[in-house]
Length: 105
Image 1 (tube, rainbow, N blue to C red):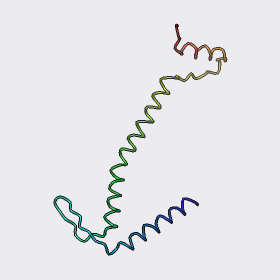
Image 2: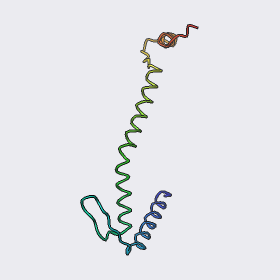
Image 3: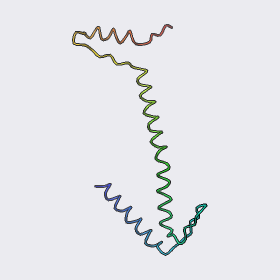
Image 4: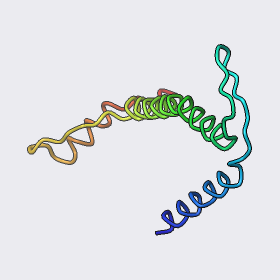
């Protein structure tokens, strides 16, 4: 419910911003073409959306790398031992001890 209220407030603020800046116009010059008389609020919203679209692949790539590193770190440290129905707790403990690196100091 709180997220809905915050979203509603944001929509109202954007609508107010757009309404008050409806008469303000600007020209947007892209190297080969110029858009004339574009409302300022529209230019700002488009710039924001383009920024989000450009940023999203980097965010997802960074998250993917972090998850891969975490899996690699945990996978190298502990190798799972699956007990069988005939294994006792002592045999399972012996298997884990055999797989762990020994400190010879």
